[in-house]
Length: 161
Image (cartoon, rainbow, N blue to C red; front, side, top):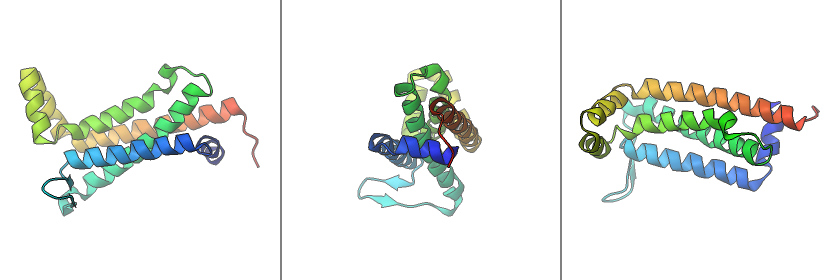
């Protein structure tokens, strides 16, 4: 079921490109915010030993986000399903990205400045529970992947070989 649905979606180069762009963009963004990638004064990529789990979760969230985004867009555009049905994948992506966004001190400071106590509390919460929130987003994305593949397989009535 999965192999056939993925083959159907990713046989189109647009969906493959969308998946690669979303995944790559999220890896770079989240690694930059988690201070794993540096662009100034020169490009540098360094994963400290204490951040290996965090880096692995970033890669997992980004990869699943790219995969689920392509599947969801396919379901919306070609199968005519509603955004509401395909929305859980986008929700998982937002949680995964938001978990790492407040780790960066400049964004945390900006949130605290803009939103006052609420922004400071949100920044502290997201920084403290970054890994559990990424695990929750991986669970949401895995469920979204399962439902997307099931929906595509059911709607397209793929014949098993």
